[in-house]
Image (cartoon, rainbow, N blue to C red):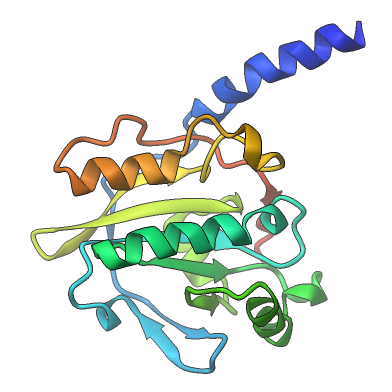
Length: 200
């Protein structure tokens, strides 16, 4: 019985990822300004030659988010030279999660050797604007006619806890398609991770 349930969960997991949850795609995104862990303010306009961005809402405390630093570094290393930098944003409730304080973010970025900006969304406004739900929750935005348009949102890939078993690299596939001038095949998946709790 236990083996059957485990097999069923393996079959259903990719389907769960592909279920849509918000009408975020093709939404136009305005620029925003947040503090990076180096103390400097970051805005999209800081990358005037960028073709697009990989934006990942993440945090320090979530067990799922903890599995991704190496993969995020790899994505930024591959795509930043191609004009698509990766930006990580923490919008966690620091009242309930002390591990997500700005100081702890800076410590993690140094320890994990982040090669990308790690931004502090202290008032959680940017996460609400993007309709981010979980950590991690990824968005690929692309410049079209001078505007930033959401082309993909959801999971980074299809296996948060076991990177060696990843079969579908949703973010990478979306960026590859856009760089080739093609439509993104999978435009939306369900992000799997810890819920972003918004303060009232």
